[in-house]
Length: 104
Image (tube, rainbow, N blue to C red):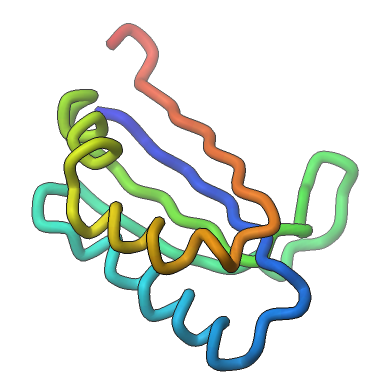
């Protein structure tokens, strides 16, 4: 298993239409058939604490069954390529955290 967490900070000058396009394209990624699971979100309304970062606009979490599936997603998945092509102009910043289970 591999958990792929992506955090997006969008450019502040995006139009409502551009934000809507980003959301539509982002919503397609968790639907990729070979994923174990997927989730998109916004910062949760949790209480501010020094260890919590609420500054991002959107998050994407994809659970892959294997590192091979994640590598395919990065290099050959047409859905991922489409998202990057259409939405990269909207990003001010992107941060990725990939996690694998302990012992595996």
